[in-house]
Every structure is written in structure tokens, then in C-alpha cells.
Amino acid sequence: MIVIVGFIVVCGSVLGGFMWAGGHVESLIHPSEILTIGGSCLGALIIMSPSSVLKNLVKGMIQAIKGSPYNAKSYEDTFCALYELFRIARRDGLLALESHISDPHKSTVFSKYPKLAADHHATEFVKGAFSPVIDGSIRPEDIGSLMDIEIKAMEDEHHHPINALSKTADALPGFGIVAAVLGIVITMGHIDGPPEEIGHKVGAALVGTFLGILASYGFIAPLVAKMELIGHAESAYFKTIGVILQGFFNGMQPKMAIESGRRGLENDVRPSGEQLEKLFKSVESGGA
Image 1 (spheres, rainbow, N blue to C red):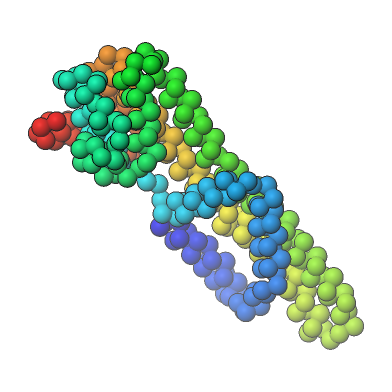
Image 2 (image 1 turned 180 degrees about the vertical axis):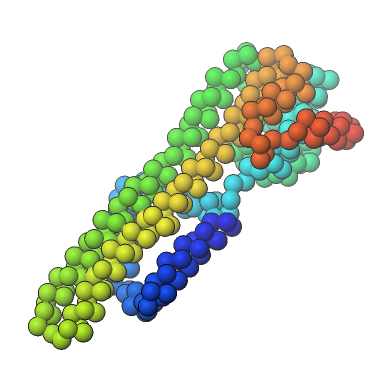
């Protein structure tokens, strides 16, 4: 929810400075300007985006407000689940994983780790890596290329709504100018009116420019940056899973395969060597 805090700071700073300088907040409230800018912005977004991109954009914005789901706990659950699967495969053979991989949501292994089990994309990614190896349709050492293709497609899908929102942020100051010009046109129609009326209408026109610039640089552009960071976090998470799985399929011991993935993580989500060893022991004590 840190994004909400940021929005509040932006609004508080702008309005606070305006009021401190002697301005009145009610002079900034012009619903017609908001309709012109907001409606034009929304229309442009609809024009440039297919329905699938719009749906992903809404999901991405909600996720940006909630924060990245790929935290330290996500990695811990993932490491434990993969380690347990690797131990089963080493002990009983890859075919012993079929019941867990064919339907991860009913697997006794995945059900132990709620963060991973709740992530449909992650469980499907693991399933998609194991399945062709188990049924023998691909050599284990070649599965990495398939995972790379899937991650690339995932990155592209995540980038499309970000790109659309970024272009919208760039267009907002322009829509603010449109609203301001329309306000000036209205003002010219009342040019023979009293100075107070003309001043009010000119002020309303200038508010359009103000709103367009504020919305662009104070809200939408930072939200785009936040969504990009979450996209990078998602990509890093799936790449880590890919590195671990490829290491195991290439003959690494389970612990070393997971260690190879751990070392590529950023500090805020990377467990220490001691923490990783505790995770291994917790899996082993569970009788996996």
C-alpha cells in the first residue's frame, strides 16, 4: 500500500503549497475540466489497447497498489517445494512426480506451500517444465530453451499494458492543454463581461493544464514505473525457477540446483545460506 501513501504525499504537497501561498482549494475544482481530460485520456487508452491489454492493465494497476507478490516468503515456499520434488525424483524416479505435476492443486507437495500453490502461473510453469521431461518428449538438458521462450512471452505480455499506460501518461499534459484552450474559447465568448467573471474563466482554463501535468507526472508516470518494477520482479522469479529446474535436469544435486538459483537473487528476497539450510532441514524433517 506504499503507492497510496505516495499519492497522498503528492496531493498533500501540491495542495498544501497552494494553500500556503494563499490559494483556495475550491478554485481548483472544475468538473468540466476533469471530464475533458479524464474522458479524452480514457478514450485514447481504449483506442490504442485491445481488450486483453485493458484487462491486464487493470490487474497490473491493482497489483501495483497492493505491491509485488514475489517477496522472500514466495521464494522460500518455492525453494521448499522444488527441493521436495527433487528429493522424490531422486528417490523414486521422475515418474513418481506424475501425480504431483499432472494436477498441482491436488498435490500433497504443493499444498504444503500456500504462496506457491496460490500462484497459478508459477505452478503451471513448473508443470510445463516437468511434464515433457517425465513423458520423455524432450531431453532434460533441452528444457531450458522452452522455459526461456515461455518467460519471454510472459515479459512481452506484461509490457503491453505498461506501454499503453506510459503513452497515456505522455499524452495527459496535451489533453490538459486541450482543456485549457477550450476554457479560453469559452472566456472569449464572455470577453465583455466583468473582470471577475473573465478572471474566473481564465483560472478554470489554467486548471486544465495544471490537472493534465499533475496527473501525468504525479500519478500515472510513477504508477508505470511501479508496474515495471513488479514486472522485473516477476521475471526474476520465473528465471530463478528456470535456473533451478535446468540445474537439476542437468544432473546437479537438489541442494546445489536450488543454491544456483538463490545466488542470482537480490538482497531483499535472497535467503542466506544458513536460512536455506534450515529450509532444507524443514523439508527433510517432514518426511518428503
